[in-house]
Amino acid sequence: MNRIGLVAIGRNEGDRLRQCLLSVIGKVGRVVYVDSGSTDGSVEFARSLEVDVVELDLSIPFTAARARNAGVAHLLEADKQIEFVQFVDGDCEVVEGWLDCAQRELDAHPNVAVVCGRRRERFPDSSIYNRLCDIEWDTPIGETKACGGDSMMRVEAFQQVGGFNPTLIAGEEPELCVRLRQKDWKILRLDAEMTLHDAQMSRFDQWWKRTLRAGHAYAEGAWLHGNSPERHWVKESRSIWLWGLLLPLLALGMAWPTHGLTLLLLGGYPLVVYRIYHYMQQKGFRSQDTALYALFCMVGKFPQVQGQIQFHLGRLLGRRSNLVEYKTAAQLDTTS
Image (cartoon, rainbow, N blue to C red; front, side, top):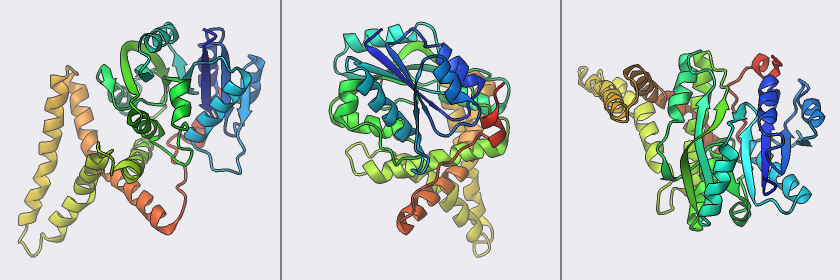
């Protein structure tokens, strides 16, 4: 296990950070915790476990990508023998057996840069929003285009592409994977349990902010790599603009001169919901889950288009995007 290092990132994760760090202590060569201004004793707790702590300079805008890069830099400076880095968010617990499984796969496939497994929501039944997260993370097994925030990466591949793009406020993992695949590296999703996540999402406005952030990520990803052969996130961005803005504007804006005929366009929304529902059922999801997921996929076009607009306005005005957080200050400060 000395060949594996771990980078955890967080801010005011309280007991979630405790569970995260205790799940990996003694199971990897070195653990680095990167903190972005916690006030709940996270730094002190991490140091009490003899975990290496990196405290980010908060005068520079924080992003998860920047934190992960800082963690890797510290990790490799402390131990140049590290070959693989497990990334984990501070609100996640690494499942027993995952680290061994991930290392075996990377050893067996030298052309694979990243392996990831099944991230599960710790409390999927506590709210519909937690349930949506759990469904979202249940993705197909095998070679894939991208990973999420929890994954194990090969140091050689990570360094070859220069790590994460530190300016991205979201979507930094898929963007990194685009560059890795351009260098002929592969990404694998394994049929294995990886992490338990605690979303703590109980309100609609939290879900809205998280979905807005996704829309921003789609816009920025398409802007950076939309001209590549795979047209990264171009199709997704076009769908967001169509359903989130253009179609409702056309239907409502032309309703008067067309004597209401354009309102028929709004019938496309339930049709798309049904198509998603049917697709999810074919994948084996429960009817209740498929109905919930299909509905929120459609409703999500509206916060996503807001995120797209924010990105492009900021780009045109030369303004750096601010981090979008869906957890409240009270949640971020909790230690229980």
